[in-house]
Image (cartoon, rainbow, N blue to C red; front, side, top):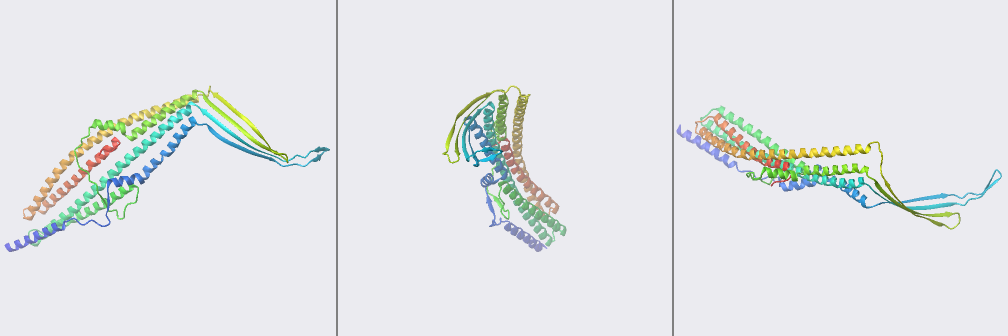
Length: 444
């Protein structure tokens, strides 16, 4: 009987050693794509459709600013021309009256015109166009910051998915070890077939979990490439190469709030639009002021009649200068001023609301970051305790003093603790990304 037990335990130890040898990490696949965060961000800035749409909006704003500025200092210029031709007519007798013959005639004329107009509305439009261009630039900066945060967050999701998949692979190996141990103990009569079947169920659940985590890795890779604006590789086997250390937050909440109020691109775009609305108010008030207009024109004509030599006729320069002052317009100016003031005040209140929101978002994100950092230490302790409990349960089952239920429970607790630790680490990194979005710029 003792010889049988010794042989049985030799079989168990051999199986465990073989499983440990089989746990060596597999060689990387030849079709694996390695992707750094810098490469992902550079590609997204070049090809992300949403960002490119925002980027293209600057061109019309720039043209509007240039046109408004040029209209203040340059006159309008125009060239006109006309051609007139009358065919020759022979002499006729009509009711006893002789109608003399008329020769053919033609006239070719050209004109040159200059014009200039200056009004308060034109000056205000130039200021408003400049402010609108500044707002477009801030929209681009805001869109770029949002894109960077989105790509960084999705890159972290991909890292987390791969970490969870690696853990699931380790869980499968543990489940296989447990199954081999249960089968070895059953072969020497140390347990029942119930233990073997329970270990088989645990192994099957681990296999399903591995498939699900591997599927999630591919989905997260597809999402990263979707944000990058380019097709994903096929198959989407992408390995992120960057790592992110976990360090204690050293930022000051007050300093972060001050940075957000001063640098948040979305808030700065609203402030630029407030400048534009102020110019619109000035434009509305300028309708009460006089406007100045000036024009100058000249022309030259070439006239030919029949076989007579052509002669030229030049019109002298004509210059006009006028000043107009509106008197009564049935209250339209009052309505325009009231509407402009309403829009200005509405945007002013929107900016104030946005500033309060920035304060709230930055403070909330910092509190969440601090909690996420503290959670990592708690989950790390839980993982260490669960791993120790699983090792003790394994030894108890190996020597026959523990049950398969106790061992399976300890294994599930260890896997849950490991999963929670991975989640806590990447929740910390995502909390930094959320804080960056609230502040409006990168912090690391």
